[in-house]
Image (cartoon, rainbow, N blue to C red; front, side, top):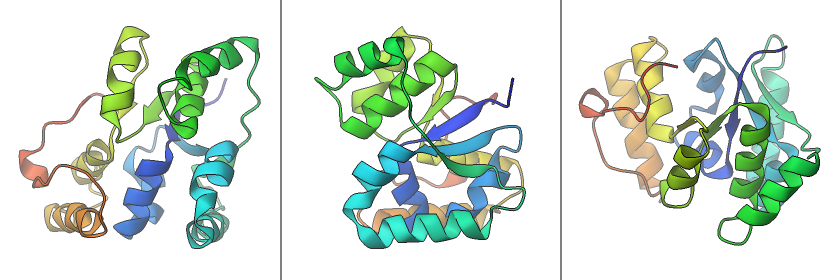
Length: 177
């Protein structure tokens, strides 16, 4: 059995791209593999060709020993049933990521807590946000405090809807990954 994966939804990927720190993700939590479902790349991130190209180029660049990859979403019957339920109230990417995490016991990375938090808590799915991952980057020495604060501000300046906090004051969703 492989390492537990952190399954990145489109919003988290975009936040890290806008903050110029996508390349740091594989080092943030070294005991996890970071993945993006192919359906998220194709249907969500693929809406913006430049974003999709950036991700594909970036993943190719860090492929040697990388813990960031695109994986196929080949849902089994259970995942399809979960997805069919979720898609009624959530986005396509979120639904696929949640269904994948629920059926593989992996960690969801999403910023859209309004749509994901209650479901994850009710179904025992561990989840993290962009800010949680930035906090882990700070805690694990991947970025210093000033770099984390700049990362947050850069994501906000790009129009991403995340809380405006300084990392030293942030309380993570889960602090024991």
